[in-house]
Length: 103
Image 1 (cartoon, rainbow, N blue to C red):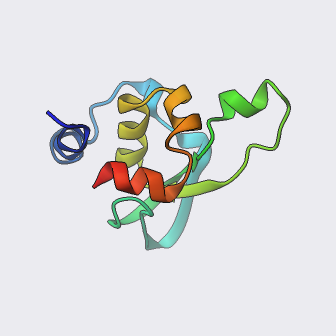
Image 2 (cartoon, rainbow, N blue to C red):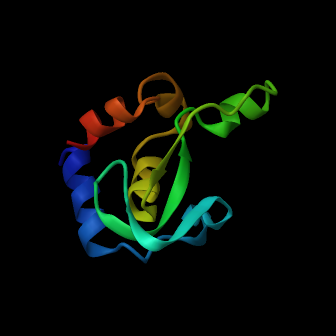
């Protein structure tokens, strides 16, 4: 099964059943009107902030956390379920690269 198939299955089947460690409540972007996830393009009431270079890599070196994107919690959970921080930092560190992996 490809990573995209795993991603799609998780988005459709068990969106709210992930362990609490995948909650991103500290980084929620709320608005009164639905917003579009930058990755899957779905309209959502709340989006989460995803750091394109994981904070783990920048926090230790006391560097600027870098660019972020606003994505739905389902996409955010899937990113961190499918890819470790090393892969995210080195290979999937732009919206374009994440989108290509997603499609």
